[in-house]
Length: 269
Image 1 (cartoon, one colour):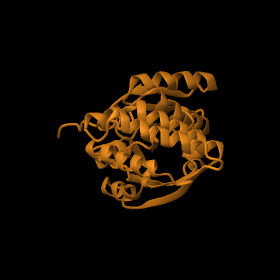
Image 2 (cartoon, helix red, strand yellow):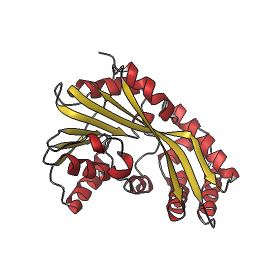
Image 3 (cartoon, helix red, strand yellow):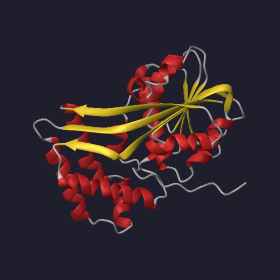
């Protein structure tokens, strides 16, 4: 078998990233999947992060078992703490490799992955591995953003520089920041000829937009993307500070609004 790809997570696991991801909930991030879930299903949440989506999925399939998998042990500590706070008991969190899942063939009724594939160097291989652990008739549910569609109001020049830098760093990592538009092709290439495409536009207004802006003002200074941008020679600290200030100023706008496209794909094995 070929060597396992070596991925580098563009965002990293700085607290600003983890806290941003912790705002996610199944009702928003898995809206296309929740109506298909039923009690007793066994579900794998691949790239579960801090577990806030996992909790909602677990409630939807209870008493069925949910396994939350992530490559980073540290973020799984957040996930276990969140599950304890939510009093959700049908979840197990494990560290693992998405390219070599430590599960037998046909173990799961559902495999879900939110915002994972955009960070991988070989997403088709990862989806093929997800397919392997699905039962016949089981569902694959994947969803990714498309960074090129991101758009703020009011417009501000530093946003364009930020978006360009984000793409440069992601491509240097051999990842695909505009994964939303590529997702259907990846799923088909991994052995799912019949798919459902579920698009939606994420729209953040007012305080939600301000939180998004404040979060990115921190992430562009302190998270993995900042370290990698400097390492690759794409930006220096002063330039990152300028981007951070631009985000912070935008977050204080009277009526900030932010939008981008998300694409979800459902497929049956």
